[in-house]
Length: 184
Image (cartoon, rainbow, N blue to C red; front, side, top):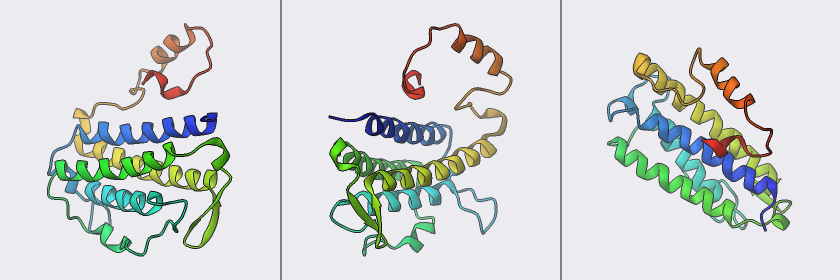
């Protein structure tokens, strides 16, 4: 049986995955390689890093350290995806690894200790660590996408100058207990 935390975390990860994908749907092959300067990351580089992190953290996460010997984090910051399609294949592989791990958990598991770089974390702490990490990077993806598309950008949340109407709609309904992503 899944507890509220596990259900909520699944929805939160899904939310950030969808934000990324809704950003990518607005971009071209050229867009994903754009960098503000030589010291900044492109969307392709951020995705490559996220995928590398996901595969390292979530593969055999209950029996192996989350920083795998086979991971080469430094190469995650080299822009090697040839196309948006190639990047999306990797993105899907990373998220599948994460969701397979999360969906294998039961309530009794969440206080189990696992390790990331030899530092013990409860599974809850490890999940929270990764949720924070991925939301940070998805925010970067969205921001870069929005800069690139400028006036062509399709908002992924409440559009500017639409908050009043959004709130009128929300407050016109009965109070209900549900996750904020249920209506997305």
